[in-house]
Image (cartoon, rainbow, N blue to C red):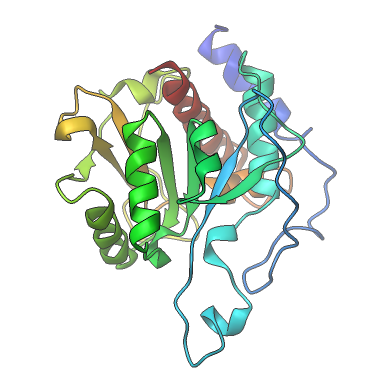
Length: 258
């Protein structure tokens, strides 16, 4: 493992080598991205984004079908992130592709880490709740990202359906996930889009015991993937993007080594 100082500097340099300095292809809120086909499992760590059903309003779909919350920051967020993980660690990371799966898809069990954007709109049906319950019980780890304020209510209700007895426990820097690769020095983040909301990290633990395996982590009042997506554009300060990458790398390393 390289020193933290050298790794941090290396990460900073990588942010500017991720992709051409061009924001034309970046997904914008209100636009539907072009979804690429899934790739077959080949043993490498592949970024898996969770797809979920959306509520319908007036027969026109969510926001008239123009916005898909679970797809936010796709595909640039995961492309940039997987390249960083592959460059900074020995993880055999697939950087040329990612997959989109539902929670009740049997293929999900092949991948140890899953990511869900905007869980404030997630209302799992019985099959999806069972799928995630089984996935976590078999050793899977899920990251919830990009939700704020009263979106917590929907997320909490969804998790109660998945794991009725589980508690969402606020985490602090003493947990090993914040020292799994990088030593995270603070959890006080002020996301430029979520200003005025205190960022909080919640965990779901086996048997509700923080000393046992962490099953899920929720980046509440935060949006790590937003930093990943735009890290090559100068939209956010470099140090903020670096911190988002450090947390993401720690999540992957923790999940693959526990």
